[in-house]
Image (cartoon, rainbow, N blue to C red; front, top):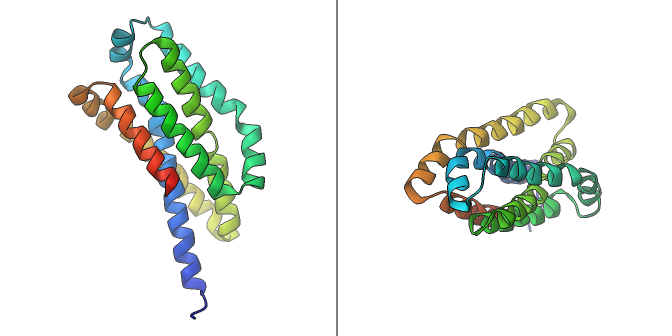
Length: 185
């Protein structure tokens, strides 16, 4: 039996990094997606502009609330299990949001998404700090942050296009399904 070598380790850590990085792309898609479909959301749910504030608040307050448990989860469960489980939670929240029949359901969906995506940045940094050398940390952190920027870009024009073609719900259902698949991966 061949003993795993340094090249196997580098390949494995790159695969895990790319998975967490791809999940981080979706963190930004989740974060900014409601702004892109705001007008359609307000019309469909019969809500006023205050809905956007409630949706943003539901997402960001739950995200902020989860920062302390995130550290404890990444220490006790480990980075990969924490990111996998919470990414699936985000996927469920996005699907719930996409199926929302009223403002309350939409807010609950955004709270669930906020809880789900809250662990990815902290766990990503922990992964980089533990799996990469000190002289690689800054570069890998920069790549990780850049992947978030890709998600920010994807949450604009591509999401607007999908929303125009299929309505505001379909993109969030798709994002939720992709998040579930990424969590499983």
